[in-house]
Length: 184
Image (cartoon, rainbow, N blue to C red; front, side):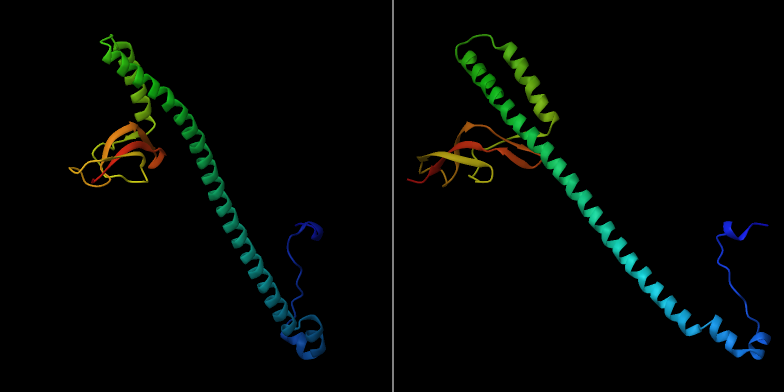
């Protein structure tokens, strides 16, 4: 069959009962059950130890993988939000230009088309405007920069939007600048 040097099997000497009856000392020298049992227990402990180390290493890897994925997503979202903030400044300029043209009775169809495209781009990337006019002031969404006295309105009612705010992926990327009322 195969030579002993190429075999993966461990050679074992089998001792029959007849041999042990004739020479009992041979059994104790070749096969000490207590020693084998101790070796088996030791190997079980090592195996258990290595299994525990493997579980911890796997948990560490999974945690690192999750953290890395989260860091990548946060980094990408941060850069996108930076870009969007710069884009919104240009968008605001177009809105102001349209208002000036409309007030001056100048044809603003070209600006209307550009603003429509910009609106669809914002919508495509889940960037939603914050509607504030008539709402109650919420510091999570609004930034009050002026206060007027108005006895007809409840306290902290938003009376004017000075600059539109926006939300991206359920996070405020730019708060709405507002004017709020106080009862006088």
